[in-house]
Length: 193
Image (cartoon, rainbow, N blue to C red; front, side, top):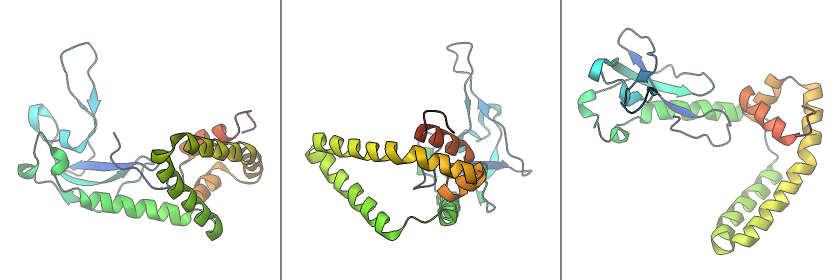
């Protein structure tokens, strides 16, 4: 489960990762819930508390769905972790490191021209207000935006993929290659990509 959702860096969801005392990354924790033959696995940091023969993590760090891990580590004081409410524990260090990572991803992306960024911001703000006040008009506006995407995305996808590698396009869009593939297939559903 990814805890943090990026603003504009698709495929770069983040969470707290853990390290054991010897510096290794533990595998998933399996917990037999006793209701079936299926034993689910978990990778949320609070499961590595040493209870019931589970591994005991002594440090946390940022982790990203793209495979990046933060270099900085932060000690875990298990005496301060509330078993029924682990979200109360301070994970701001790893979250800040992950936010820096996503800012770097966004900084490496192709910039959106200022006039277009202003228009998009205005549309976003207007849609936020409109959705509550007049959801039918909001849906109409979203439909018009869908038409714009449908008209332009397929052609842009074909042009970009002819002259750039998937890695170059992913960096330019601030996304991962896996998320890029899904996006370009959505943009060009007729199969040119």
